[in-house]
Length: 346
Ligand SMILES: Nc1ncnc2c1ncn2[C@@H]1O[C@H](COP(=O)(O)OP(=O)(O)OP(=O)(O)O)[C@@H](O)[C@H]1O
Ligand SMILES: [Mg+2]
Image 1 (cartoon, rainbow, N blue to C red):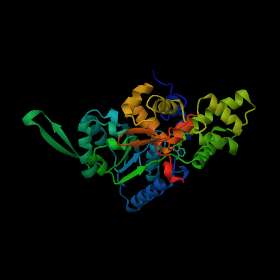
Image 2 (image 1 turned 60 degrees about the vertical axis):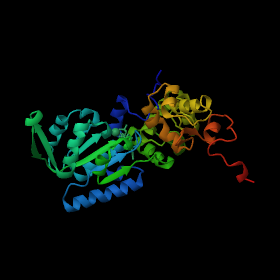
Image 3 (image 1 turned 90 degrees about the vertical axis):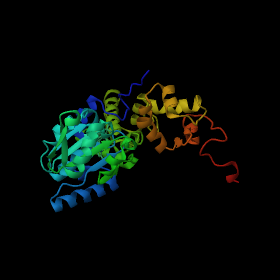
Image 4 (image 1 turned 180 degrees about the vertical axis):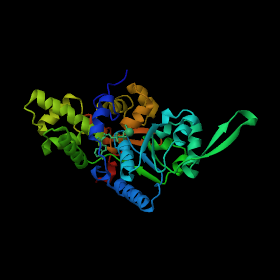
């Protein structure tokens, strides 16, 4: 069994991709939130522009829907440079990468999405390209094979990954700047929603925006998607005005709860509490219990549950906190992880 993730998944579907193109901020100035990343990146880009050289390679890591692709496009825009887009899974053989690298223009920005999923030979070719702007094209096979060095134009690599931990150290070390994208604060998502509602021509009062923002799992992609669903609800069931109560009713209908947890989040929490007594339990066991891939649980559900203080990762496995029991309306056992020590409050 697999969950219908269409509505509340942080991952994008086709419909999202179209609308996202329209809602994507184009410049660093339009990019909301992530203030530290924005400031650091702005310095990297301005420095490079001043020197008239391609900036350091940039790695962006963070959960789905936080703005990695958006920032990659912004980097090219701010540099006034052309952008080439590919992804790790598309680079199966070294030749796939060589074909791209050898045709890059000077200063071009090469965006490799899901860079942790690149095949090994391509990865090794990339090391040399990043460092020396050179690739070795191997001609022939066996003892007679020779490597022909090929110069490539200085370029800037922008890599994005939802799983920075999977990147081999030699690759990670070759990025001059790493941007860690974190979940957004509610007030930042309110600004994302205000901007999107303006672009979509939706009338969104502040209290309605607040209700959608706090249920958006800290993720702009989800905020934009929920905005469209709430708009439908407002137009069909009411007079179009998105009040706080209306937003809450619409999102309850779509099974997004008051803390923004979706069905998968609640299934993971529910299994952790009901089947494993709150843990500790290993990731793969937990994934089997909810009928999902371990990677989905680890990349999609867990980071947000951890960030909300509902789940903790310990060396022995995943553990529910007192907050998790309370969130599902259950009584935490006395020795629950994270609860005040019995003799610490008297
Ligand atoms: N800082 C931001 N300000 C305004 N809108 C944003 C911001 N970040 C993301 N968005 C919106 O969220 C959508 C999703 O962002 P994006 O595609 O960049 O996420 P991503 O991190 O690349 O996700 P994935 O891991 O799935 O590739 C964008 O189309 C944009 O509309
Ligand atoms: Mg992306």
